[in-house]
Image (cartoon, rainbow, N blue to C red; front, side, top):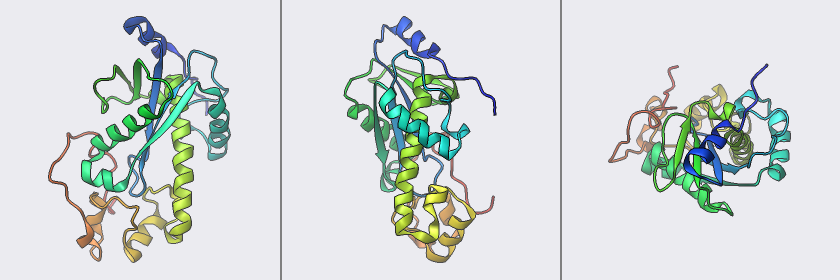
Length: 233
């Protein structure tokens, strides 16, 4: 599939308009999964020419993503990962869980960024950071594309490890997303400790519905509802 390679135009714009010297790109993976953490990668890339083939991780084959992530590990100036667990997602909601994971990633960087590029249209991070949101930033911005690939490969590896503990769910194949095998295992075996128990799919599990968790507060529509699909789709 042909696609336009990402550029440094947003990174350059932020430097010019805000005086930022260090710009970080942030992308997440796992928002729509039914099991596992939501994972955020923060990547600082500078303005160097990116590796050939860099783009949104969803446009790459697993083999290409894995090879590119290995190359990016040594190519990026700095990067770090942050995670929010299923329990934190249930307790806080997705918007706050993303904020927590992103903050953890930013705090783990060896340098403090002056500005942040977030993939998408929602600023779930907020102050004290200077944030620029970019729709499809994982395709158009070098730093966000790098974060996208690293986050996807690392979380997939984590889910494969969990899959070895829960073989019926095939997490190594579906990464916690609702594949037919995953849904069949849920119906028969119920949720694992790695499932998000506050999500709508629990309403479609009569045998296990008593395990569903409820939050006392709700967050704004948008990020919060994304991925909240039941069994009938």
